[in-house]
Image (tube, rainbow, N blue to C red; front, side, top):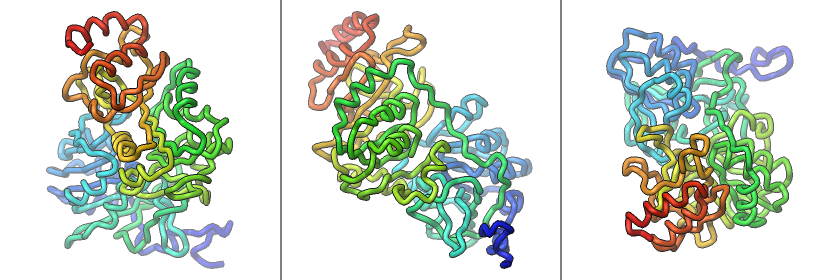
Length: 434
């Protein structure tokens, strides 16, 4: 039996490419004082733990797109500055500090090229016998980290995650890397934020049923409300999927047969995404109906616009009477990041038959606080009043595109919680918009 196959005939990449295999500690040993590093999405946690253990390091800068447990460990290192475009629940819970860099997901790849790091670490799937390597559960902007124009002494490492799926689509090769980091099976599944939907989904489902026709191409933001409401549209026919994140809600549409991609105009017959969540792994593994591509393709505005009847469904934290959306800030503090929502919103603007939809509960804090407010703080505006198309709460649909300032305010007040409508009306009158 060949040395590169184990007892059950599974390909053993650690033997086939033994000269490139190294431990997280060996890879971290290549980092020098003053270095700049850039990491993949998902974060290469095993490497980050090893790097955090090098307590002697100083003046290190590291870019992690969505820091998790490894990012928390890095944030506590006095000699390392952590930069990120997206704060995560794990970081918030740990009260870990990171410097926020506002970058859209579609631009992550270009950002890393403009701000080249000496060392890149990318999480990938297991190498195949021909040397090709599946990107794992995400490619996002990772392709730019791997395929950058290298300078002398630059290094690119792949952290091989043994439990991520092998997804058809874009891939790398062992020759793209200076080392393949081996990590154990246990604890390898990527960790993502919790998503909690509201109890009463029926109003949102009815609204989406009205807004999304048969044959439309859909995108879903990651969140308990957006993806679960979409997942209930199993009575629809011939939906297509072109999205940022392959999530449980979209998986349910595929399994039910509602989403078959037959009428798609871009990547026909394929569900297209750049990130996959763990609950989808078994379904998308070697599934010919799925296709993973870089964020520069999945979130390209022109590509999004070319999809048939594009319907982009994303969440929001609050919206003001001017029609401005906040998806990132809570009480003036950065809560998360924009991700790809803004890219899909802008893609929809380039198409006459596309609609971008923001879903949000009318209230927060157990009904005491309205999510429709008189005016969002300046630093908290994610999407401007020129961008926002349709807003949905449990009290109805507000169509804001082409509406006047007065019409926007009036329509939004109508879908606010009745307990807050009088106050919002008074505030709108004081601002002289109604």
